[in-house]
Amino acid sequence: MFKTLGLAVYLSRFDKQKPMLEKMAGSGYTVFTSFHIQEEYETIPNYAEQAREMVRWLKDHEYTVLADLSPRSIDYLEATSIENVLHTLPIDMVRPDYGFSVETIKTMARTHDVVLNASTLDKTLLESLEATSGNIYAMHNFYPREETGLDRSLFEAMNRTMRPHIKGIIAFIPGDAQKRGPIEKGLPTLEDHRDKPPYVGYLDLILRHGCEAVFVGDIRLSETQLRLIDRFNTDGVISLPVVFTKDYEHLYEKVFTIRPDSPTPLKRLQESREYASHGASIEPNDTLARPKGTITIDNVRYQRYSGEIQITAADYPEDERINVIGHMEEAYVDTLESVKNNQKIRFVRLNNN
Image (cartoon, rainbow, N blue to C red; front, top):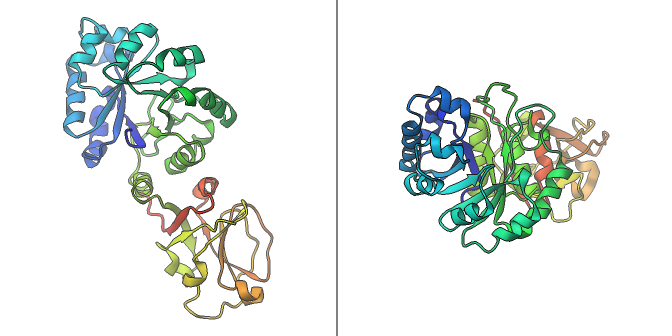
């Protein structure tokens, strides 16, 4: 299986994307690209040669290449057949678009992993492809126009139908450093992700919806978002961007485990009494209301619970036994939806760039 983070790369924007791609060289990430975009074919000189150069560059930098192909790609790439395209272009995976027969897709699957368009699949097609020797994946579309992205119930219904017949499901999140035109409103699969940090959408798709891979639809990710995603992929710990009061800044970069018996609206930190107070008595202070995303510590009025730290995943009123010691960065509060019991988390100081 390819890595869980993928990047959409466009021939018309390749030069602008190269700096990010060079930084990530050797990562083994998968790149998704398309070779049947008519506007690119009509405006890029020597389209076929530039397309081949781009794929060679990506392979030289150790990327896995997933190419979106349609029958028109044969002409665009100056090939004699789709088999000739697959034989001469060093791609690893193919996403066949409209116009290919089931038999042709079966032939593709004998030599390449095949990624089907999730929005046009039906059970009959899936069942007919199961006997092929290759791996079959399903990739959802991205939706440039606001209000047209999928809702969660439809997304899950589509996935339930496909899962018994495929190797994995792929979806898109928007980028944040540079949006793709002409609308420039992000390229998510789920409408709910359009205005959220890519990291939030990434965790949502991987942890809540069980996607096997997530691709960035837009042109670039910021260093901050890439760092948060890479860190999670490295150690499996969810980073929660927070702002602590001064007395609790020592909690940055500490790793905690969500207690296995935590109720859904309140994340109780298993190791909290060990880290929290440095042996000092925790007196009542800032016993404020606790909206979703608040970090709290129980004070001496809670007796044996004094020193326990929680994160609120719902709104709670003030309580004289509970001190507020920080809050999550507002844009990242929905990350809590991906934090389940037994999950490890760390508090981080956000560095936007």
